[in-house]
Image (cartoon, rainbow over all chains, first blue to last red; front, top):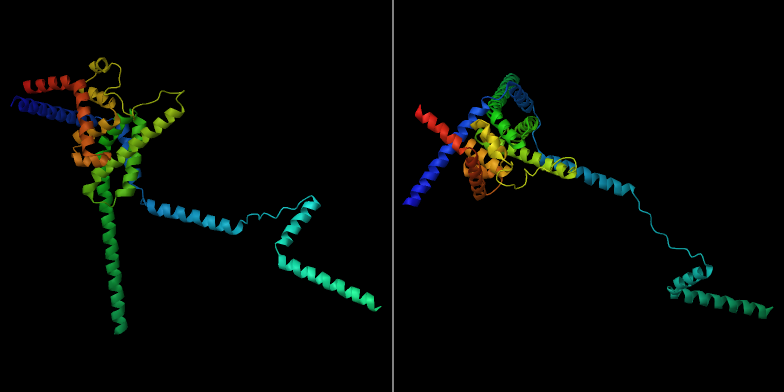
Length: 130
Length: 211
């Protein structure tokens, strides 16, 4: 019982405090100086002249479309340099590299050999007839 | 006959269209008037709230103007019953942005000015000797000084819930926090403010009752 009475007293005290605080603040704003009121009046008029409705989604959409467009246009005109195969300064290394390339194409190499042998045989035959 | 009827129909459509345009123009005008009346009603309390928070008249005026512009841009087409909480939510957002920028600048230029810890959680009363300071002021000024010394969230909770009369649910939406947080902030604000000015208020009530 006593605790309830204390709680009620506290609540009543709080309510009185809130009431008084509210009254003090309400009375205070009635005495705002005229210069400040004039500035507030101008701010209000300026705000009411605002015509553009805030549309953040459309703005973000437009910005995103612009970024994507710039990217695509840039990718069309920008051609990255293709790395050329390295050329060896040392001719022996270059020859070795070429030999390696030839070895990768063995069929072609075999055909070359046969062609060379065929040519050699023909030239020998010609020399024998004369 | 057919062409005459068609012309008459065209004229009728024009009249109706002009009527609709006129009706829409009237609606826009009424809306504009309602917005003007609403902002005129809230501008003083908005200024005082901003001034208590920023402790600077010029900053408070800038904040109120920004809040009004943003409110009109975003919410002018909302129902009038929603304007009040939306406006104070916009105002609170502007005040929070102000403190955030001020804290960032203060950290960057901390060699030039003191870091303002007002935005962060602070002790209940930041002033070194508030009682000596308050003794010289009237009760109203004391209340405002005490409010200025509160941490930001406690200020917001007290001014929105107690002064502006928003419900706990509305206050929580404006402050973007849980209802329990609103009650906690309000409780702490209450304790700090009563400590500062309760005696003055009681004596004023006593004088009023005596009359």
